[in-house]
Amino acid sequence: MNLTRESTGELTATIRMEITPEDYTEQVSKVIKDYQKKANIPGFRPGHVPSGMIRKMYGKSVLAEEVNKLISESLNNYIKEQNLDMLGNPIPSQAKNSEVNFDTQTSFEFFFDIGFAPAFKVPLGPETEVEDVEITIDDSMIDKYVEDTRKQYGTPVLAEESVQPAGETAITDPEAETKEEEEAPKAPEMIPAEMTAEFFDKVYPGEKIETEEQFRERIRKDASASFSQETDKIFFNKATDTLVKSTEFDLPDEFLKRWLLEYNEGKYTAEQIEKDYASFRESMKWQLIENKIIREHDIRVSDEDIKTYIRTVMLRRVGTEFVDPEMEKRYETIVDSFMQNKEQVQRINDQLYNARLLGLFKTQLNVVKKEVSYDEFIKIASEAHEHTHEHHDHDHEHEHEHQHE
Image (tube, rainbow, N blue to C red; front, side):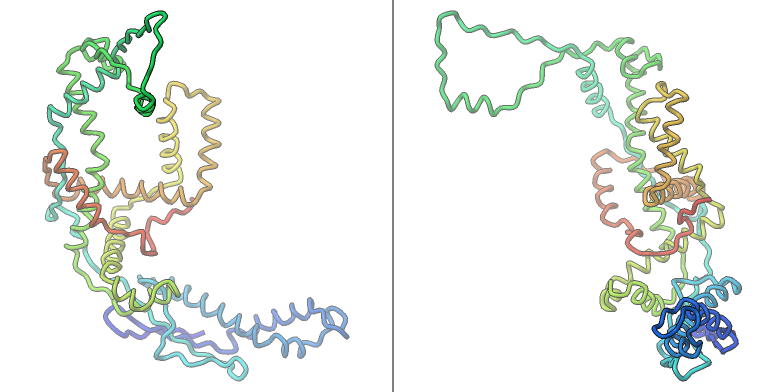
């Protein structure tokens, strides 16, 4: 077996593979012997069919299968041994490969085009500025929450019963009666709860809130936290966009277009790939940047991290005060069962990686805080949603593909 590599561009090369009889003869003979033992051909006892007959019947297909195995194994081994940082997968060379004839050929020559990942530096530092919006919790929002909460913990007003005078026949308009039936029942009126320490303790048990001012500040903190998940999403997307735009490197575009066409055989046409290539290119750029950050900062997610996340979500739903040793055992059984669902586990794996990347961005980048009103935030969130990178639409090799340890 002989493999050589010839550069065809700054980020492309062609691998030449030469296969000779020495590479496959022994394995082909072994398979033929195995066929000979198992062959059931009329006129011959099992195991006594002449090897020449077996070779004539199956030799060509066995040779083809063994050569294909050699190609796959040899390419993978060569890429690992040479430590090639590749994009996509090797593609059979359209220009150099010739048609193979397994009837007449004993030696074979194959050519594969490959693309390389570029070398680049990620500007993950104070030189890269990213805006982080923070929703201003104004007094009107707190007033509304206080009003709703006082009603929620208030006392219902008992409506007086209407009594029909004795001996009087009620004559009603049928249309009016139908209209009344169609109206939704009204919620009972509530007398709002008094702003007392007892009320504060019902809303925030055990926090020893004594004054209205303390209560309002606690609400402000809650409201701010409730928006953090959405503001973090916007910040994360802005950070990835900024890093993609500020990290300069080339890609082997023509190779990637060919790879997309072959890798997604039948899924896309060449015209569709050409049309959507700019979006794919941006997505590929972010993936390369993301993978480099993960490697350089040694970001990892273990099976135990995923299990801890599942436990946390489960306990949050039921409340920790009810968990006893017996219930913990049941939870562990559920957690182990959940870990068998590869799609769910991969989703949590991605969420945890993104959370760790988010934490890194907030400490490494130059984060510029910007306070916005709730209405301004809704507008920003809507625009951000329209421009979000749809990374999951493209099948790439991520550094954070989940693997059981």
